Image (cartoon, rainbow, N blue to C red):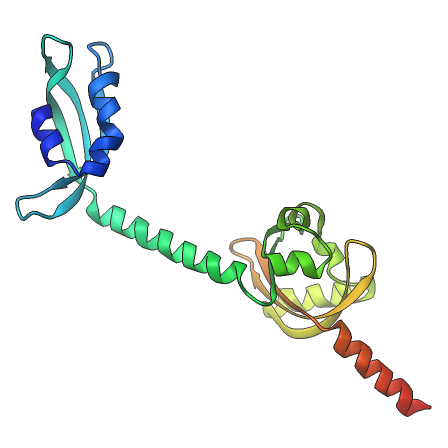
Length: 212
């Protein structure tokens, strides 16, 4: 394959990205290359190829003239990767813009490994990173509830809409309606929480009034 033909049929964006490799990085000492580029096929469609090869000969200025090697059609792989990337970006957008607190706790050490902004704010942290670095799973429940809730989660694999009292960063407690989904295979628990402090306090006030 001539370098001239490779340049002619390579997608302009990919050519621009790889020109330095072709024109400058290839030498008689370092004469091998590996590129993932789009090449126009005989139907006029852009297809992704993995090009592996080495330079056969050089011009008088030390530039590569011809390359020998293999080319593998990787279009389906690239298509799959793009779909996965789009799905991940879509998931991340929904996750980060959810109106409820979402966070994920690692079973091994009960540390937070993922969270959205709502979760950080709910528990009194200024940033997501601050929440991930400093909030721990054992802080989720007041001590007398912890063992029974974890036991139920292990037995059922999930807990739906349970009202629990949770300690914030400043040491104060809030009430939140929480749900938990256990994923033992991947080693984490997905947590969902909504601040219900005002509702609980209002209900308690009504109960106190009725008791008088």
